[in-house]
Image 1: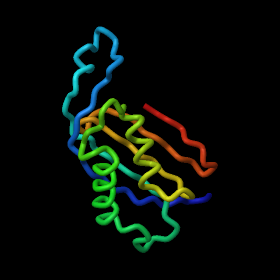
Image 2: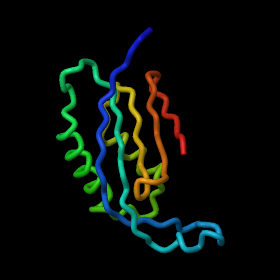
Image 3: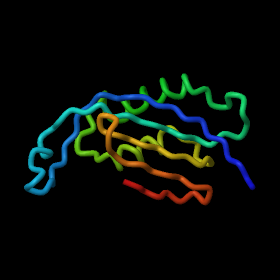
Length: 123
């Protein structure tokens, strides 16, 4: 049986977003609203001696997401879109990975990049 090892790191970015096309029953989501977006990144590693340093990866990840979205101005991006942006910005292209983005650490989206390179979105 093959085994794959992953490193896991988490960071939080404070920000605002909105859903401009929200249905009437969720009309309140059309206005910009605040969240703590909690990112959890799981990245395949090829050896078990700190190939990816998790402290540095978390710090770099937070800086990259703040730069990508203008210090928490997530605009109209959904958790799914934010997770895909994080995957593209933070994960080496030849690695299996999972990127999870949760609003306030409770609910959100997950993007999974498998060995075949296919992105599967799970919400």
